[in-house]
Length: 318
Image (spheres, one colour):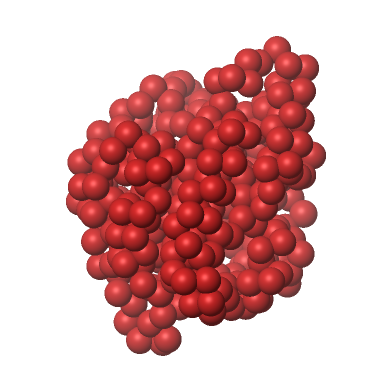
């Protein structure tokens, strides 16, 4: 099915904790979904990231397990908060996973938010003042690429001083693709233009998508970069059920996931809850606006059922 070659599935690395309600999480659901997505023909599987703010399975560990259990799907982060990790550790882990997977890693990175005390605390717990996160993120991206490709890397100034450091193993890929997330944040969009191999966004309207993309194009041209080389990826939350059931189940998911209701979440990120036709129309609108890749998250406790419905009812039509 050609349509799902430009689609990936977000795995429930947080959902298995949320729905365990204090019991042991069903970690195996992640392997089941990944193996099913690969068998059906999806292009990729993805894991989210947070440490204490939204507890979940640790993403790099999960990616290594996925790399050993799958053969064809790409394995990505949507998205990793790389400022929470030292770039030497991160470069080493990602390169190792790229070797285990034979070159299937995509590293999606984001700066995260600072609008809640839980995010401030999360950064503090790992020794990173949250106001430094964007500067650290950008410096880290540059270092990751150097550590994956150069010998005797030095970084005399900044947050991560290095002197003549070489790292092995190198990734299988010449460079692991780095896709950067941003909505309507000026610094984030400039970062996509300057440092990204792709752009991940979850803006809740095609008008906002176009506005953001125009800014990325503008910034790319200012620095002499061809924006046409950037992958444009939309992260979309889906619940495929009858309208009332979809809204009820989706609201319960958002409450459990973020601690805030669907009405609030849906103003911040794209959620499409309801019939297959509704989801198809939304995907088609964004494709017409320029999206060439989709990461689908199922806002439901019934992940495998939602994956099956999406594959049968939506994928053939988009």
